[in-house]
Structure formats: C-alpha cells, structure tokens
Amino acid sequence: MGKKVYELSKLKDVITACKQATIAIERVNVANDSISAISELVTPTLKQAITGDDNVNYFELNGDELRDFIEKQGNTIYNTMRVLTEMDELSALIDSKTATLSGVIDDINSTVNGINDGINSVFDGGNSDYSGDNSQGATNHD
Image (cartoon, rainbow, N blue to C red; front, side, top):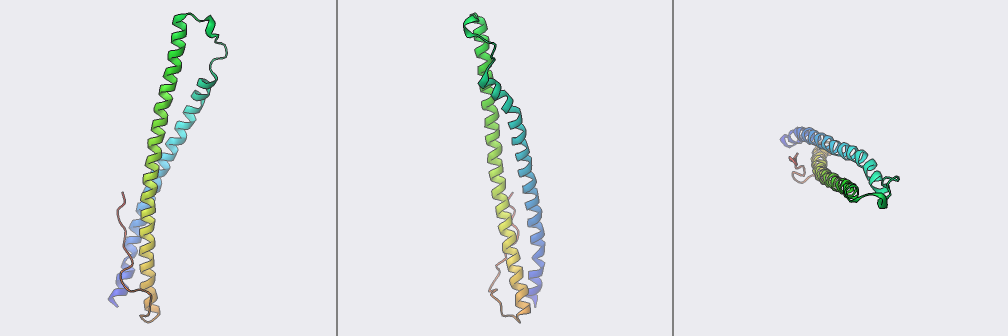
C-alpha cells in the first residue's frame, strides 16, 4: 500500500512542473511581444528607406548634400541591421524557452502516467502495467 501513497504524492511534482511551464510561457510571451513591438517600429523605417524621398533629385544635389543623403541611408541600414539582430536574439530566446516548456510538459506527462499506473494498480487489485517508477517527477529546465 505504501507504493500507492507514493504515487499520489507525485502530484506535487505535477504542480511544480505546471508552475515551471507557466513561467516558461510567460517568458515566451514577453519575447514575442518584444518582437512584435520591434517589427512595428522597423516597418515604417524600412518602407521609407526603400521608397526614399520622392522629392530628391540626386543630380541636383551638391557633393555635401549627396554625402549627407547617403550617410542618412547608411545609418538607416545600419540601425535596421541592429534591430534585425536583436529580433534574431529574441527568436533564439523563444526557441530556448519553447524547448524548456517541451521538457516540462514531458515531465508532467511522465509523472501523470506514473500516477495513473499507480492508481490503476489499486483498482485492478495490483494487476497493472505499472512495473516500476515510470514517473520521473519535475525537472528544473530553467
């Protein structure tokens, strides 16, 4: 009978794993919100850089004006590159947190399966597929 109580006590592991999953989801959401905000900021700048200033006639600009114009475009491209790099880093963070979340969910499933086997063995008079400690418990994936 001690084994059955042990299986029921594993519910604490499920609760811990669920809390870890909730934290991971919150972190993924923060990274997604950051990517959306960056995208909203970058899109108008990129559109302006692509379309350029329709009122500019390159042939009417003197050397200094042309250099200033090209420098502004270069700055826009450089700043855009920096923003895209930041978005790439946020994307990598999302991938990492998603992997963490997958691991936590695997732990929850493993623990629940072990609990189910333990409970089923009680109802089946000890005849269950449960042949050992299938439940791994929660693992800190953070």
